[in-house]
Length: 609
Image (cartoon, rainbow, N blue to C red; front, side, top):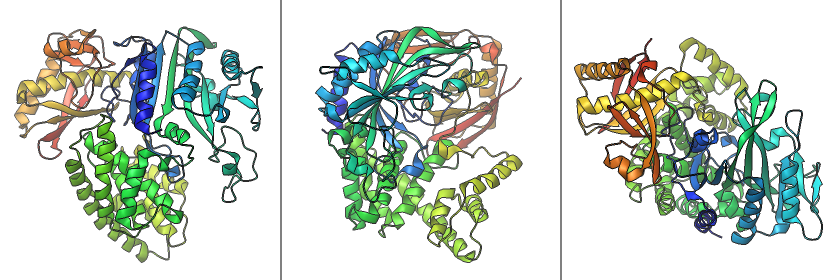
């Protein structure tokens, strides 16, 4: 079954069961200052999972394009990708396990058509913090049952055993991890994962490093593929341990690409329709076939270019900071892999971009006319990288007698090479570099220069402090002040918040004068001093927009929306969080304003005592 068919069936399946289909969030979450990218379908749902009502009700479903850099080193095998699409459904204090688990099974077997004999599940085994999830075990036994309850196992793998018990490290979810790591007030609970079995020949394959090792459903040999996970948020951490929540929530996530692989019974995600078009473009433009030694680099190019195209289409451009930093590294990492194909890297990228745009525009996630814009950005970045790559290779050749972690750091400093690129280049010379030693050099430099670059390629977080909430409300005030001073031409083009500053991108054809920036700062501080109330309401989207509420241009909103009104000064569609009154902010100072290119600017500001 094709990915588009699975997506459509999934949304229709849950819509028929009373779920409202909510729009996907942008790849850069506009209302979550704690992370660089939307990394899962549940990310925009965090406030609701913590108790805030959702404007569309208690039963929700969606399909969410997501990006995670955590597994970037594993991209190149048959199943790890950074850019993926997550199918999700949620119950906010509504239904729970007895509805959710049978629905998951019904969708997988009846709608997608998966063979029940190839499906296996895992549940929480219990520990000193929370009991074994016997409720899920009984439900799964009933679901799998023919004439007797399904077997429950704890070790190894037996085809006759359908349910497997795992500790909290594998089958517990909270933002902080397993129960022992949860801070007081954090919510979480057991989860139940569904795995698809591609057959024992994968585990026992002569080229598998796992051959001869004991296999189990959560094994990483490639035989089993996790295709869905139901998280049951039913506990809260207290001083005395974890206690039941008054209302239980369900959060399900299923990777679309993985579901397509299971549907087509192929253990290689890259042979599904999500990737076949782009891989074919890479084959034609490089003159190489997707086989043997060319499979890993082609997979990296396909995955990274998918992510890069999506990011650029939604307004991100390559840079040395934050999201732009990650985008630049994706393009450069893919370009290095392109060298292994021996073809023209620009030609490979240019031929592949339209296929990615077509795939995501058909799904309604990006504009169909994005190719020209994306091509221009990618071409410029590749031109820039070709120069530094040439210089980097010359430097490596010059230091042939001493290739160590210091050269990796020097190339990072001089040319912006991420560690893994230098590591791959020196590996061609027969030298292996240590990530740990490189990190030590980087940490020392960070302490000396206080750079904010460390860890961004891993998708690093900002924080969850009260000061970030203050910055969020300040951003709304700044947006309106920019319009007051510079005119209605101003519209939001992105934002990022940390505990140290706010960054706000906006469209504007001119350049603000120093006097105008000072006036903007003065207006914001006047509104802060006025201690205006910040009020949240749930409104019809169209009515809210007609009433003058602002909306972030890249986001698609549901029919019912959360609206935050600040006195009689600002009104915006937003998911929060915000302060209760502007007086809580203290004050704001504009730090700088800079150009991001034609018609786009970026302003930085900091809070003052």
